[in-house]
Structures are given as C-alpha cells and as structure tokens.
Length: 215
Image 1 (cartoon, rainbow, N blue to C red):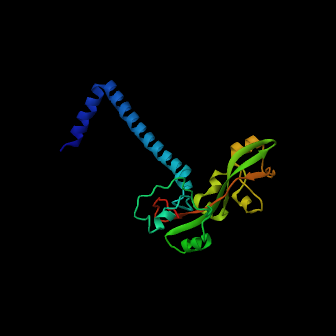
Image 2 (cartoon, rainbow, N blue to C red):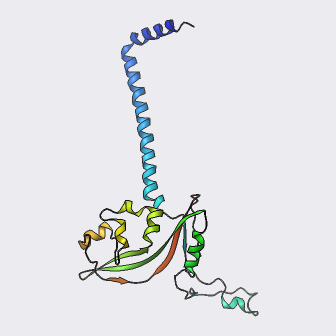
Image 3 (spheres, helix red, strand yellow):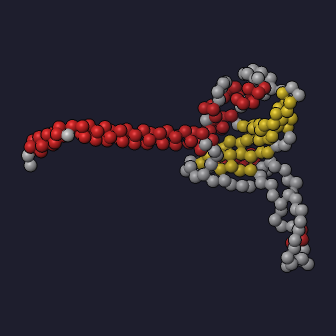
C-alpha cells in the first residue's frame, strides 16, 4: 500500500474545499471540547455532592425509637387473647429516649474490625435568648475527635478551629444564627432554654454499605 499516494490524495481533497474542511474541523474540535467539559463538570459535581451529603451522613445510626408497645395487656389474658381486640389511644412506654447500656455497645462496636469508628452524639432542641427574642435551634453534643475522623467537621468551619471545641463550654454556631445574634469568636452565648434530650450514636463501616439500624 502506497501511503505517500494516499496522503497526497487526502491533502489535495482537503485543499479542494478548504472552507468545508475548516468548518468540519472547528465543529469536531468544539464537540470534543464540550464533551470533555461536561464530563469534568459531572465529576466535579459528584465530588461536591459526596462532600456535602454522603460524607456527612453516617452509614449506620443507632437510636431508641419511640413507639407503642406491640403486646398490649389484653393480649396476655387467656380470656381475650384469641379474640380480635381494638385498643385506642395507645401510648408509648415511659422508657425515655436514651440508649441503654450505650457505653458497652460503643465498646463492642469499636472492637469490630469492619467498623471505622463510633461517634456518640446528644441532640436536643433549644431556644437561644437574644434580648427578649427567643430563636429556636438544635444543639448537638459530640465527641470532637470521632466526629472529625468520620465526617471531617473542620472542612465546614468558616471561622475558628475544630481544636477550640476541646476547651470547656465551647460551641460552634451556624453562620445564620451568628449573624442574627451578632456573635464572633470569644463571645458568650446567651443562656439556652433546653426543651428535651435525645441520645444516639452513629458510626461508619469500612465496606461503605449505607443502611439504618434501630434499637
């Protein structure tokens, strides 16, 4: 095969219709450039979503679910257990929202090689006092080291350092609330009105299977 002859014919054909050749070349170049830009945009968007959502979501969350008792006293009665019973206004047991024996559970989970780490957390709704105005919010008590290891909390701190939380009576305030209350680093947060308390703990597993477990 004479490649020199083939290249000579191709070169003359390209020069014969130069305008069409230029338009075709520009079109192909633009299409490839747009394809590369779109793929890069999608990859960057996926990384952004992973950082904002998936990396801030625990793989497993354990908490004490509040629900009515499945076995009502009427079902324990020999006289009525075979009947169809309708019970109204069922209330959950007064067991509280804390996870019982949580320290032993955390210790057991940390011994599992499949688990990266466990991060205990206490969450409760509060009211921030700003003068005579009460601003509703949610406050979380965390293990700073575990939270930083699992969720890289420092990436979301605009002003200050994650190490500041190791000091006594330290708190991270969201930017919106800080702007409303005119707070800066070192200010004393006005007294809080705590309404209730929920205890739970979360952990991440090494095989990256996302699921939810209730206790």
